[in-house]
View (cartoon, rainbow, N blue to C red):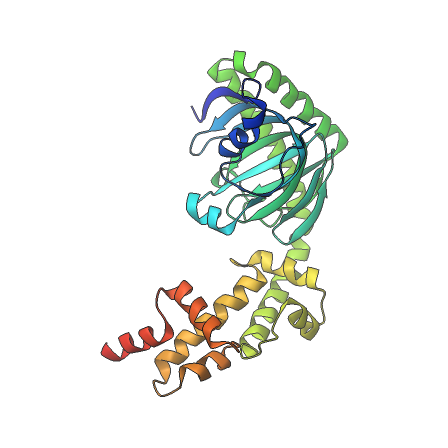
Length: 322
């Protein structure tokens, strides 16, 4: 069977003063709570019921959480690297998901909409009341719809009839899933998976034409970045200005790349620096830094060590020995 056993996680039996830490260390363990605490006059209450996905399977969760005050939660780049998450979550909120920033998109997700979370990429969100159904889908299960993550973070409008069908089935599953046989539970999860794929597919088709334009813009942007790596002022704003597009358009174009625009610039600077170190042993380290847009030598050394595990001087010395 491709799913696990039905389970319920609740703060009902947890002392009020310990509920927040309990939830942070269980339901939110793949994220980082950046700030916020429950208010003293609003005790936290949280409940999650559903079935966890086994590898290659489908998961389903019904969340009903009152954090007792707004908190900021993030799935950081470090978390993404640590747990190697490669699943997609499709959330259907019954209350708005506020302040979501994911994959270059920012805004609220409202009831009647869906949102795709790609666990391979960071996101942040402001949470207070969390009331939603969530499907966990393995990336390889999808035939293309949302598979490359380009829909992640977007508010996806859902046809009213399709939305009502999904809510009806998800609501029934949340109420009686623990009583279903393994076969019936799997059939129910498969049905919800097909509805989610239908929703993602409709939006994927709608952006295919725009996607071609975005990929052309991505190529132009990478060439502009490579041409101006020595410019310390190189940024999203200056790249967008040089190409005659908005910053939002540039962010959208980089959804088709392994890294976002800022990460791409940082990586390109360091790769250029490594190449210069190898090509000309007589070129001073300070000039290498300037040629790659670093005005501060200390910053250059620190970032270089973080990326390659050694300083520029150490790398050059090792190359000479080889």
